[in-house]
Length: 278
Length: 278
Image: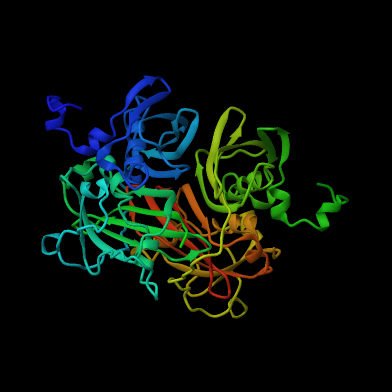
């Protein structure tokens, strides 16, 4: 991308970083992006969003994403990668996709994605978001660690923000965090946007121990609870994120996430399993 | 299976129903089981368990299951089916498997399974099970619908049991259920057992509406929070199950599950997305 590329003035970093070039009917190719770099390889939410985009741009796609599972199989190296989407089965309501994310011969991530045609019917929302001050009344988080992907989001913690010390805490802290989050620069809500936001929550092992330890997401599942028109009607709001965990045992822990719209609607619920050494 | 088959006196119905015959290096074959029949096709937990067994019996397998996602792509017909496990990537700690469950040319289910070598390290269990009377003090559930798979489990609800009326309730009920559950006949805990138990919770749309409506699980993710030795040490206990949901919207709802050991340890946490028409 050069300064004279006309796209640079109009495309959001997320749209640039998830760009895919079609190699043939079965394969797309992308390149790593400096803008979303994590400690090792890309921010997981970028991988999520890139896989979603591979299906959204597939001419066979019908309906919109309702469920995504991404398995992070190995570190992703800088440079190019290939995505192979396969449509396993399609019915009147759902489409089942399977995707491989490779670098050369090596599988570095795999995914399954379900698209569906939603129909208005009985609705019920028994769960409610936590009551917290609006984003405008809370300070932006300043990360103690300089990672590029953290510059791509504005985090505003309600309550205690993540603090990373050099040594683990004597007593573990609650794994629960509540925070407003938005892309930086702001970006309209759609499935790419939600796929990226589904993985913005720091691993709960950092939160609980109060320090950075070797750790990584092994598998991440996200459910999308709104349609395309519903999302676009929100514009580019801060979403209220809730992240929690139930159990840390023998080097694996679970982690849950919720992303709530400002009007109290749940847009995403998710869960992940993470590995840690601590 | 004939009455003189020596296995019939020793093998649990779950072990019989998940038996697989190796066709070649890449494929196993199984057959539908009357004992776990649901309204249409097999009980989903049997599919879960069969996919887990395909990997457990694979000579390449290392470690034990930590995460399983099963996508239910289409109704499964009676008769035989094939399972093709592929080892996508193996490292020192994790193995990433992908599985296709087919009938002839048609994919009816797909799955990803992560196995891992667990290492003792920092542990923390911030979540606790609900406090309810022991299973021995609660009545066994009598299902109002005669489905074979329901005979394969003993459900003991703490609080209101699922009631199915002919018409939906005027006001939706809470989606939360708490119940003790065990295989019938009882069966020792292992990964097969847990994979089956991960899908014993009635779809929350039935619970909320108080009636049976057209509905089905689209995708189901289960995390296993214990190792082989830890599970076998429990013998064949009742597990405490908690099932809940956050949102029912435009024909899809989420659903969560937890399975707790009698000593208060979380053994399984899971989530699913279900389709409904109601």
